[in-house]
Image 1 (cartoon, each protein chain N blue to C red):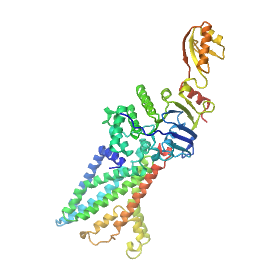
Image 2: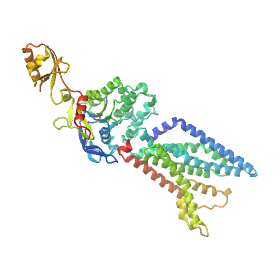
Image 3: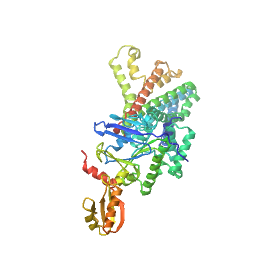
Length: 274
Length: 320
């Protein structure tokens, strides 16, 4: 809490009504997803095996968690720096001994704190998987940590573009476009490339670069590995290296967009400032 | 409570040119030295380059050429370094609206990395001096424009900056607010701070500043013998020539007896304008009139207002 910007952001955010509205909507989403999972598991006649039901809840829950965090994280932070420009608070903020990296770090951690808050709220839903014996505590913690890490990357993307663009609307649109490219377009390109390079045998072994370039850094990729490596989920088809690769790629993305935000603040010109 | 103002510092702007991305020069080869304890009034029409100069002096805009020295340290394009010496109150103020006044001050004391005890002392001093005590727990959004300006001024006291840049500090203030602001800013100068103020409210600026400069299209307008700056004393004394307004009996006859070079009738026909380079010369003229049998009712030093001087200068040198 030594970062003054983080201190201020948390104070402002905690008073915002939209924080509580988003929180309620988020909980409602998780509740609906859990209810659908349970009823779906029950209707599919899973022989009253609690582990199967628990696995279904955990699986749907953790994927929904990542999806929601990857959407809500940027929504909460895509205007963080551009709003300082729009509300003309940036000159006073920059006219302090704080470096651009301190300012951006404060904004990013504040945005991430929102992601952490939502992740914390989803714990009871994920815990159902543990209670019903589908997954152990370690796997649940792993899933939660991956979701939180994915939320950090998406927040960093939003903060970076918010620092780069002068207007919040542009920043929101650009963030949406980048997230769409990353989450939707990138895997589609990967599939198309695989179609063109179709050969006999395992494509992941024959064309590992396609998988690394288009699939393995996807926010859901490590979770797919996590789910597919459970004993109840059948044979593991994905390499364990997905998780460290994804985490490394996410770290690079975070660093890159962090640097973009810092550069946006450093690039001082009257036009950008005012 | 006393202020613990840091050692005095001067601000030197040397041949600074500021260009926008469109390659338009907002400021061209401008120089200015601001000494401790001085209030400098920067005057000029909209778009003349006043705010650009202030932002540049605060390190927020990198100069295209030239140097900005604050306390002999080059701060051009380096807001962190500049912040050690310079506090800028920009226009618009840009205060955070969704925090309380108390939180606003605590945020800036944290931003300046002040130890808790010093932060507490400086905030208490700022609250006391600016009369903010009743508003501490109010959201900034709920404060009037005047109180928001006072709150923004707390940054000067919290940072304890020796150089203060105020961009249109009186904008949106009522008469009493402007008078309070005047007192505050004079207080900053009497503590040894160097203060640079821009304002479109020239009567207030005339009361506030010790020295003035008129800027147009990013350049100083030469005012007197090619010099760009003039003091308040020079302004009061009529700027380029000294004159006195005299009320006496039979002003038309008095004018005739002194001659056209020495006296002229004011447009109201009630007073005479005495042309004299010094007080002694004026006294001699008065004595001459008294000897000629005129009764002297009132004598005052004449002068031109900052409004007059600025308008005349801008009309003489229209924007290129």
